[in-house]
Image (tube, rainbow, N blue to C red; front, top):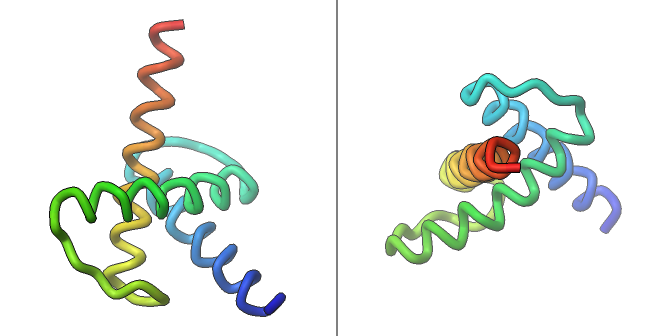
Length: 84
C-alpha cells in the first residue's frame, strides 16, 4: 500500500515537473507533486468530457492526461493571479 502510494506520488511529481517545464513554471518537488495530483484529476475529468478513453494506471496515456491537466491547472492559477 505504501509502495503504491509512493509510486503514484512519483508519477504525479513527474507529470507536474513536465507540465512546469512546458508552461515555463518553476516550482519545487512538493509543488510538482501537488500539480501532478491535481492535474491528473483535472485531466481525467476533461478527458472524460471529451470522450477520450485512456488506460487508468501507470501508462503513457495516463501520464499525458496528467500532464495536460497540470498545464490546465497552471494556466488557471496564472489567470487568477493576474486578476487579483
